Length: 354
Image 1 (cartoon, rainbow, N blue to C red):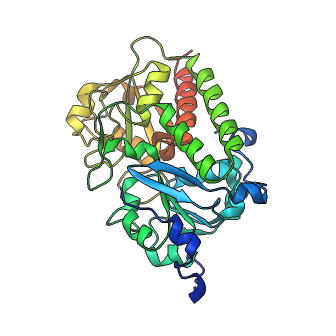
Image 2 (image 1 turned 30 degrees about the horizontal axis):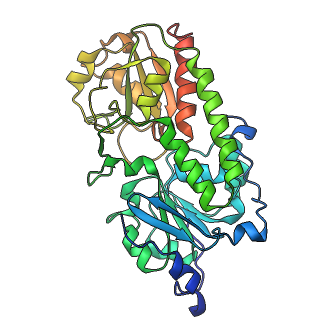
Image 3 (image 1 turned 90 degrees about the vertical axis):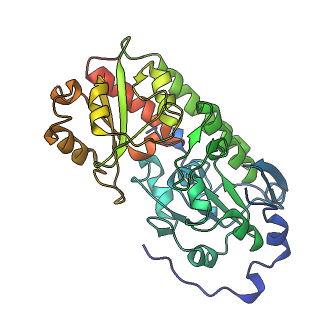
């Protein structure tokens, strides 16, 4: 959807004292009750006026008051904001890999989609945002929408998911981690956005729901010794999950053995011969609706696996031991818990889970 172009009035062209004071100083599914309704936040005037300042990826984000014109540049961040009930304060979203969570569909329909992938900086600025959020380093970097320093010079504060703060990012944004990602980092993002938006109670509710669901899924682990590979995309040289990203949370929660668990890369690319030689019990397939790589959908992945002479003899392929999840379920976000639940249900269906 093309963004509605609006004239930016001179009096608000990112030089207002409130925005200048809020600038960054440096660059750096569940039920409706679970996910939030996306209804107006209901924050009173005193709450909206409260200043807040937090550290974020090595920079300090200071807001003189709760933001009223938020642009979210990645689906994961967007769904957190919708779950916090602040759809009425969102003026644009972008960069989608999947349909929005069903419980958030009504709220999301009220927010303009600026682009399916990265919008231009001009399109974002036309929305006159007082906060820009993102899930991935490469969105707020050169080659993405714009780097954080550029937004800061324009008086627009930015917030990046803390799951990106704790990894070494490559130029392509995939990067590597020195320690495994934990659910606490995802909860930290919910908490910090709740603080910035002056809805800490909503953040507590969302996190409590996520933890309850995660505990319930953990009660039905995989059978001992069950191995898995997570294939995100690309049929030429597949991107698979290493052991330190969001799929690591899925594996540890369900006591699965990821055959690439020793890789600290978020999404290492591997060869098909190695993939087949690992011969995992189960293949978890990302079912993406974007059009960026080859073999994006789960159907395309299955067709490839069953025709390719290297992979079609794998036990999991011959026995059709596939579990399909959304692409977003394999990234650090609210959907990580959805991923845990879907894999748990898939294992049970295959006779490999509780």
